[in-house]
Image 1 (cartoon, rainbow, N blue to C red):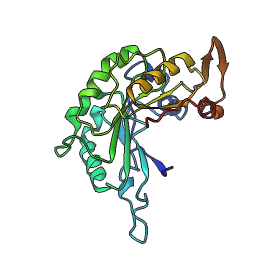
Image 2: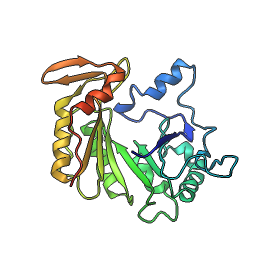
Image 3: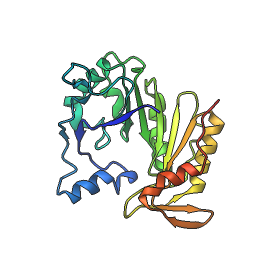
Length: 242
């Protein structure tokens, strides 16, 4: 498995849809007396370009960088910093950058001039937590010039029918329940139905976590945070096309 790190180059966001209602960033910032709506550049902004005393990059080649997970990469407030962020991704072609957004409507206008059909080392995922957001965001994501793109259904808040909209353009779908003290229900039947659609379309699928409140075969389980990933893994339903 490739080494991975977080690269939160700016922090702060605005709630966008139902999946944001109990966002962990807002919860943690509130606990620390921080206004999560204030978007600001972080001290880690230039992380990919940092070097050690020998002059080598501190982030080694082959690392997967989970990018901007305490904000949204395509926030309007970040427009002033994004060109520099793209430049770092161009310079570090030896790294893989994963970006997750709830704002596919802003992607096209925020792409760099040399983007063409995408950078080979950048994958962009769009979240779709329920049917309403899938209907709204999937056509946008599908139409965008992204070499690598996929879908995140996390937190999964209801059954989702992609209406046969998955296919060659979508590389991967990840599904997961909601964590935290006020987590909403995730039903295993919803998870299995998304898996079925992925298998039918030949799209890879990962069941990432159960969430804290999980229903299976009509029975509701309260699952501790430390067990949520493990229980999802034990289900053995991840799928990789041959």
